[in-house]
Length: 118
Image 1 (cartoon, rainbow, N blue to C red):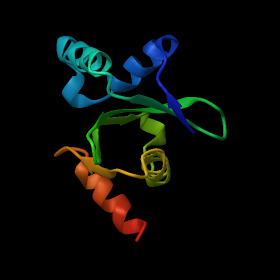
Image 2: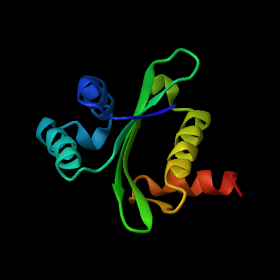
Image 3: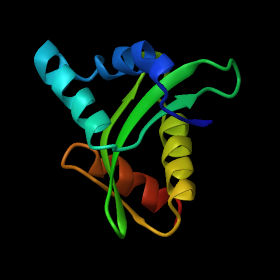
């Protein structure tokens, strides 16, 4: 289930983002998170429907006709294709009027998801 970020989810979101290798540097990590908040870019957490725990976080960037998936991070035990595809489908459904796109690191996931949904 897609859950919009709230201030009381900050530790969870930051913990999930810290799992990304490119954000292991603490300053880079803080800059990315604060940039998303300051620019009012959507941050969503993904809640597992079976045990009701947060298992992923995404940072999006919204354009007039696109949604850019900037960051996506899952807990190590939940990085299955099923979970990733369910999250991408939920984002797509949230922004039906916009095209889902990715960065150099997230586009392969979106491409694979798109092919599976054809």
